[in-house]
Length: 250
Image 1: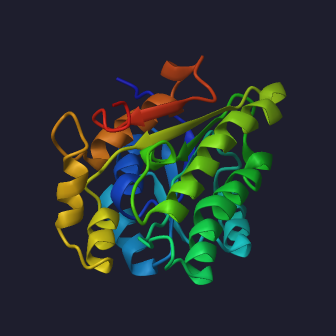
Image 2: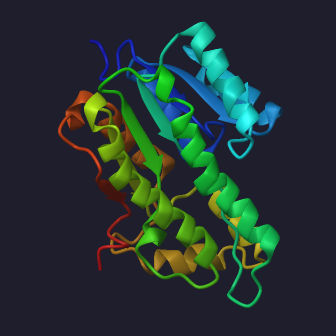
């Protein structure tokens, strides 16, 4: 039986761990050939090995436009097109108002907003009409969280991009949607707690906000991304799909 993404070519930024890696595995299982990116070569190589087939890894940082150019030159040479683009790469650190540094602001916006914008814009020449673009946003674009204002603002920008880009791309019938995960059990979430010195307390506080009573898994996000990437969502564009256990809905 053929998969939902049979014969499709996909690019996933930040595909070496967490949501990106889980989505990469799902895309391949559904018949796609994928290119994944990551900043660290060793982790990228390990991810490619885990995925196993129909995958190529291209080292790069989305905040560096030359790295994006190298990514798309590789995709063009190997496959010539991108049917599905999952702009997933992102970073987040805690910093309360009053302690926000210019470095924190620039680092977060350069990856999550500038990097995502140029990930999409530089892909346009390789996207056929009716391609699917999925942006990784977050429920924090809609909710208030202490010490998370800069990250939350970047995700609100990502959500806005989905609304406006469907108008810029309407002649080409390219769909653009945002996926907004709630608390998800990823290395990024673990790292956030450790960096802030709060360890498991962060997970416990997030857990209290989820009506379903648990943290989500990367696999659960990946299945929702497959829906937005496939023809199952052929009349869905400009939307924000919450996969959050109800956290942003109450």
